[in-house]
View 1 (cartoon, helix red, strand yellow):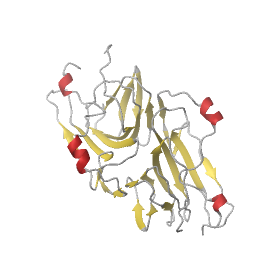
View 2: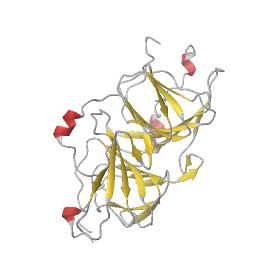
View 3: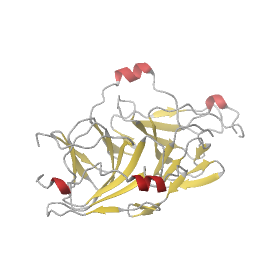
Amino acid sequence: MYKNKKISISCDWRKTPDKEKKICAENKTKLYKYKGNFTWQGIRTERYKSNGTNWSDIVRQTLIGSHGETAKFHLRYFEIAPNGYSSFEMHKHEHVVIGIRGKGMCIVRKKKYEIGFLDTLYIQPYAPHQLRNPFDKPFGFFCLVNAKRDRPKIPDEH
Amino acid sequence: MYKNKKISISCDWRKTPDKEKKICAENKTKLYKYKGNFTWQGIRTERYKSNGTNWSDIVRQTLIGSHGETAKFHLRYFEIAPNGYSSFEMHKHEHVVIGIRGKGMCIVRKKKYEIGFLDTLYIQPYAPHQLRNPFDKPFGFFCLVNAKRDRPKIPDEH
C-alpha cells in the first residue's frame, strides 16, 4: 500500500517556490469570497494525480499562506475523493483539521477519528497520521499548520 | 459610540491566565467533536456581557490555543448577536476570519466586507478593523491569530 513513495501525497505538500513567493509578496487585506462548491474567488485549485491505481486524486487550495501573508500559520482546504488517502507520515509541526465537506477518517498512531462537519482535530507533534476517505462522497477539510514547518517523514514502523 | 472603552469587546480578547495555562498544558492529540448549534464537545462557551445598552452579548469558544497546544496559532469561534459589534481596533498581528454561521460585516479601515459562509478574510497588520452584525440572525465565524500577539490598540482617528 505504501510502496509508491514517489507518488505519495503528503498532507503537508510541497513548498511554494521562491519565485512564486516574490510575485505574491503583497500582505494586503483581502477577502476570498466563497463561490460555492468548495471553491473560493482568487484561490487556485491544485489537483494532484497519482500514477498508482490505489491513489485517488486529491485537491488542495491554499487560502492563506501563498499571497505574501506574514501570519505565522497557513490555511489550506483539502479534498480527498472517495477511497483516497494521504501518506502515513510524521513531523514536528502540529496539524489542526476541521471537517467542512462530507466526512472522512484520520488515523493518528493506532487510533481512528471520524471527522464530519466542523469536527476539529488537533494532531500533536511527531504523531504519525494519515487522512483517508473510505466513504462514497468527497471529504473536504481545512488544515491549519505553522507557516515555518519541518518536512514530513515516513514512520519507521509502517 | 466608542465612549465606553472599559466595556469594549476586543476581537482579540484577553489573555489566558497563567494558572489556566498550567492546568491545560497537555499538548495531546484531541478531537473536539461538533455537537451542533455551533458548539463543540470539551469546549467552553464564554459569554461576555456589556454594561452599555449599545452592546450585544458576544460569545467566544477557544478551540485551539488554551489546552497547552504548541502550534504557533490559535483557533477561536466567535458569535456576535444581531446588532452586536466588536471594538474598532488595530494591532500588529494578522487576523483570518472565516464565516461559519449567518452573515456579518467587517470594517477594515474605511472598507466594508460582507462575510457569509466560508468567506475568508485576511486582515493585514496594523489595519484598524471592526466586526459587526447588522443582520437579524447570529453571525458566527472562526478567527485565526498568531499564538504570540500584541495587544490591540484603539486607533487615534476614530
